[in-house]
Each structure stands twice: as C-alpha cells, then as structure tokens.
Length: 64
Image (cartoon, rainbow, N blue to C red; front, side, top):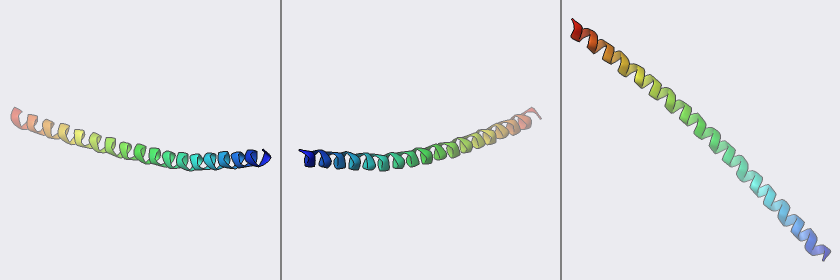
C-alpha cells in the first residue's frame, strides 16, 4: 500500500513538472504573439498615416 502511495506521489510530481513546462511554453508563445500584434498595430498605424498624407496631398492638388 505504501509503495502504491509513493508511486502515485511520483506520478503526480511528474505531471506537475510536465504541466509547468507546458505552462512556460504557453507563456513564451503568448509573449511572442503579443509582440507580433504590437508590431502589426505599429505597421497599420504607419500605413494609415501614409494614406492620410496621400489623401491630404491629393486634396491640396485638387484645390489648386
């Protein structure tokens, strides 16, 4: 009975360790995704500024 108890304890520890490894992988993936989203939003912001500047230039040329 005590041997079974120790075996179960070992299995539980192994599962927690494995879960911890997966958890840190998830954290790393999450941080990478957030970083990519930040870069993408900066790019979109830059593009929208470019479009606005182009629209302003076209409007100025049309007003002449």
